[in-house]
Length: 504
Image (cartoon, rainbow, N blue to C red; front, side, top):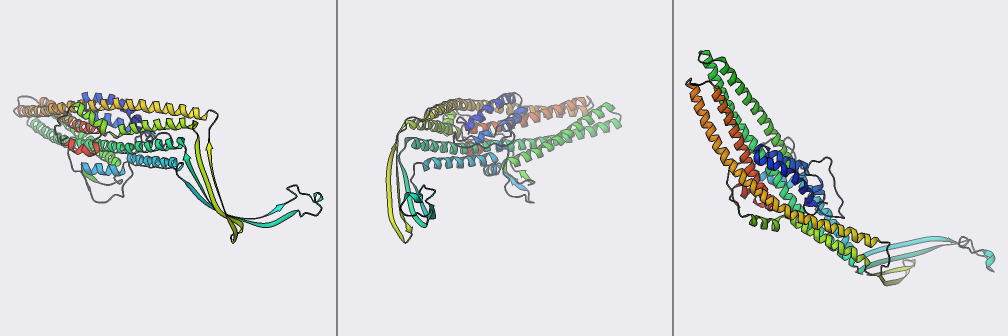
């Protein structure tokens, strides 16, 4: 299994680097922001979930390369009521139904079963057996012939009965190999538990992105509807002025093209919004066909960033994937010791007690106790091969932990840079909207006064549309940067609402 820095999350980290290229482009072009995060979630391999504990745990693979965090197990059936879906309710549903989290929980159960399997080698084993035997015996088959004895022998003797009821007990007194393997399995279980917690953080990131994207698309619909109304008014005015002979037909054609362009954008925005709602429903596990509305918008709330050292300290102390990687290193160290213990002697004791006789009513009690010291002398190189494999796994775990520590440093710093850049873009975009709307008003006044044709108005409308689009994208990028910052320090599940409100 692959954990981020362990194996689990390191598989994800490899694809994080691919998404980072997209993210850097998104800083320059906010429209690519969703594409960057969506690419991360879609490229995120299923093995990310499958690899939470190391060696003994079998892996689960899903068809295709789509991340399990983009899917879910539907919760119930659709109802005729329209669901009022808040941001917190979406997160809560995602934490109940998201497929990635469900698979992570199953992996934790598997790791717990693996730990019990190793523990069973150290615990006493007690069993009972009742045996009843009725048989005949061929003396001829055993080599007894009649000419060897002065008296005739039967060819077959019996039948005769044999009864035995017995309890058996076995206990490993000292076996360093099994003891270290049990300790390694315990650490792997801790790693799986931390991986489950980290999966919850990723669910919050996936749900938050899907919700914010849907909110941004809803805002885009509102602005496009306003632009359609403005274009319709401009077209009506151009038609009236053409009929009155005050403007040429080119003004009417130009305004009609502008109107139809805005109408096409509105159709596309509405379609995108419905698709975004479908994606959100898939992430949080809403029943297919369930109607819902988003009850929250994404207002701008500035977040004053703390020093980067504070965030790094929180990240190393709180991130579950880092703790999982540390537990996986400890598990690899114990596995290495267990492999070396293959050279050590072991001490075991066995005992049994039971009733044996011809019949249960005619039986006698017997018992036996034996202990033994097993000293390995030569096992054909098996112990040496186990040591080499354990050493290689330990080196990998340590390398992945070191890489994850550097990755955390990078993610925290990158999130802070994204947050500052997005905040600056919001301020610039807000000012651009005000200036573009002011320019549109002045161009409309000039056109109404007959000072200029409507080309100036159409160009101003284009500027307003572009300014609103930039504002929507920068606002989405800013809120998403807050969620990414919370995720980078391991506080997404508990702190995402605070960060969106501009609070630490």
